[in-house]
Image 1 (tube, one colour):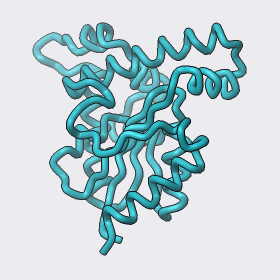
Image 2: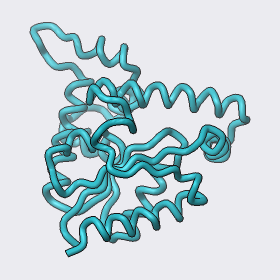
Image 3: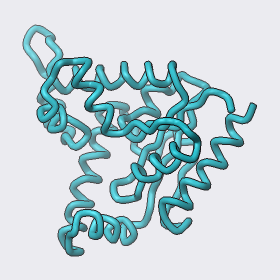
Length: 199
C-alpha cells in the first residue's frame, strides 16, 4: 500500500479508540491516541498530570480563559495544542499510522494521504458501552455521555472552528452499532483503507 494516515474522529462511547487499535493491528501500523500526551510531555517538559487536565476534556470556556495571557504569552492550553499538532505532523510525514482524536483531520487537512473517518453510534448503544466499561448504572452513564460529548464537541470547535463529525473533512462516517461492534467496524475500515491506498 501507499503511505497513509487514518484520522479517526469519534463520539464518546462509540468505540472509536478500540476500533483504531484493532485497525492498526490489521494494517500492521501504530495507533496513536492518548499516547500523544506522553509525546507532548517529552516535547514540552510539562508535567503529565497537568497535561491530562488540559487535554481534550477541557471545556471551551475554560480553554479560552487559559489562552488569555499577559504580553501575548501562550499559556499551557495553547502550548499543548501546538505540541500535539507538531507531533501529529511529524508522525504523518514519517510513517503510515492511525491517529485517534486530537483533531488530526484538521491538523492534516492539507495532506492527500489522509483518510478522515468519523465513528458514531446511537445513544442507547453508547450508554451500554459506557455502563460496561466504567461499571456505571444507566443514569450515571447517561450523565457521563452528555458531559463528555459536550466537552469533546467544545474542544473540537475551539481548535477547528467546525462541528465535530459534521464538516467537509469527514470522508467516511460509520455507525459502529450497525456493524455489530468494534471488530466488524475495524474490518470494514481495513477494506476501505486498502482500497483507498492501493498501489
